[in-house]
Length: 232
Ligand SMILES: [Zn+2]
Image (cartoon, rainbow, N blue to C red; front, side, top):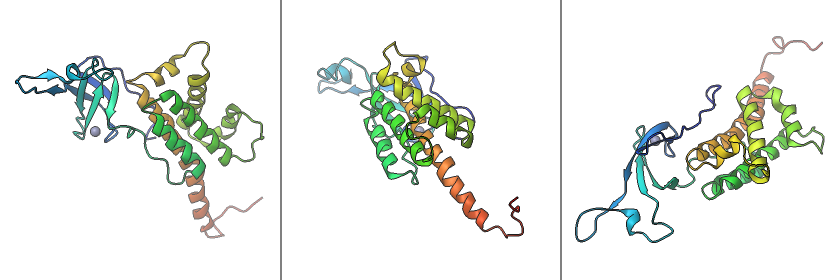
């Protein structure tokens, strides 16, 4: 994460453009939309959806172009049809394999169910924290496990840990009505980018709690003995 703010897409204020993170280059930008048209044999142009049978007819089909990389995305109504599932960054190479498995599963189901993806993202983060902090009491719940590791991570990652714990829980078990965060992750326009933030936080966690400490320890070992502070 580059700075202390978590960027969220804003709901498009105009129907002819959409603000979202480009699935090709990741840049958050306003994408202009063009309706997808079909040219029938008799000439002229008709909207693609008018020639499709249900369930694909009805909702408008359109393409958006990224002003940053020129990459195209294809939409049906509020669903991105192409490119599927590329919004989510790949798992950190140093992520433990059993966590990677949950991470990839979350990314794979995201286009079909963000509810399932959010629950899997939470499961991935919980597994990761269990591996990182093996000394936590065996029966500790995720909230208290997060409290234990929070001093070791940056504030934005700490905040996202609470967010992923809450969303993963509520999207599945929210009986008393969804709150603002849950509504956001289930929103067709804004949800994919929120889910991306949840998963990329798992990568940040690997970086901050596995990679950086190992690198620092390795370099510290090479410090000349005379330079290291003496143990008291
Ligand atoms: Zn782009």
